[in-house]
Image 1 (tube, each protein chain N blue to C red):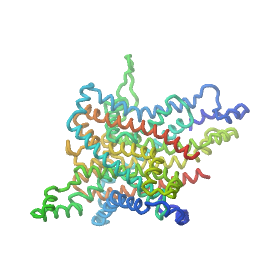
Image 2 (image 1 turned 30 degrees about the vertical axis):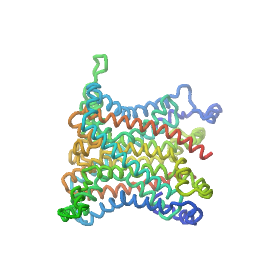
Image 3 (image 1 turned 45 degrees about the horizontal axis):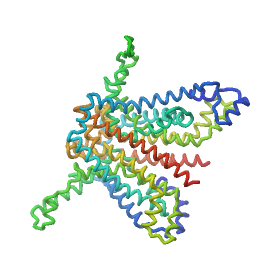
Image 4 (image 1 turned 180 degrees about the vertical axis):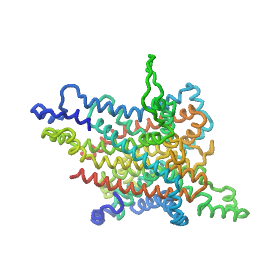
Length: 318
Length: 303
């Protein structure tokens, strides 16, 4: 490849060059043209592919001025989409958090057969297309499913029940698909591995010496967990939560399949954006700018945690 | 860490050294397996179970339907090309981030993960806006005249590319979503790799190309392949960033996830299940391959 030509000129391996090589500095005469050219190419690529879309979101959002922007955000449907997005993420993140803690405790602190299979299975949702992630719940709870048919039959059968509990249940049928529960389920599925996959390697690296010391000093299981394990993994946990939340609030494909797109009722922010885009691009980009901002905050938090986190890991190793 | 991985280690590790000292094994594993089954395993198994009712003949009828085959061709070819673009430019970005120091390097490093953080629908409409016929890049790429700012000088690119609403647009969207994978798999390997080996090679008289091909490339090859496979797998299933820019023309710019989506809208559950099952099989095969690649990569690094 052309760029190594610049970086490593076919100069004679003089003593001076070797000294420079040993001191870790690149050989060359004066300005590092190769490094400059490669860096420029890389930055151009990233500028076109990463920065431009981001700039486009904000410039389109403000194309009709600031008041139009605010108006788009204050729209009733937008507010209901914000509420639903917060609800879905507010359910999915804590549930996956509890799961992540349980799974990493089991995997990192104990040995059992099939452990590596379990870790692979936890990662499975990452390999599933978002649309398929929605589809599996449609198949499970849809009108044509075993559950859907049984439930419809049950409702008809007990339509005139005199039992007050049954009558109440019939009067308040549970809607999973094209309703909030389906959206929450699909969100849980697509964000399923995020926290577990951060915690498992972290807890494995930390081992269980500290926990064993706590238990042998008389602490019970919960005390050990709350006072030893949880503080030890807190940054990794937060890291997982940040990534999990970003995906939960931004999921489009899976939620799109199960939502039914009922305006003001089952539209999350990404779904609302997709509908607005057909009608009023500026409004769509105004709403999108909120999610873009969330992405930037996520990146900032993630980077800050990586610095913090690496230092903590380095201290642990020392 | 793939299925059935490293049985020897597990068998020796099963000796009850520390197993009973810490409490909570039954509770944590029980909860893990229950939650995993309810959310992931049962829905996935139930999806494959539907194939039983459909039958093998109907399965092949659906999967060889001309529109489905066309969608698979579009999806596979665009995610393959996007994967290759990401191999080349992902390696370049990783190389620049690891080997060179320039102002704003840390910011650039953090920005590489933007496609992971930016919701796909937002990326989708932004890319569409940029590459649409009158978009910032869509217009000049279509061969329309470009005026140099503040002058009367005009020129046009000698190309006539339709980017949005074409195969090219899909590939651009998939390049965006797959961008972090190669960078993030190659970067740590390059960081660990001591530049002294390269310096030794060229001081012994190797040409730069030989140095790259025989010293650097073998070292980063497993990571490069892993990154490619991850980007490809992600691109193959991608939906949100593609549906806006693709134009969704059947036989031309319809990707497989969209075919499933359309079948569902038409209440053609058998069709949706069959295509989804085919997609799942391909995805799981890729996952298995990635696991094997990663194990190869880590064994490579330990030597």
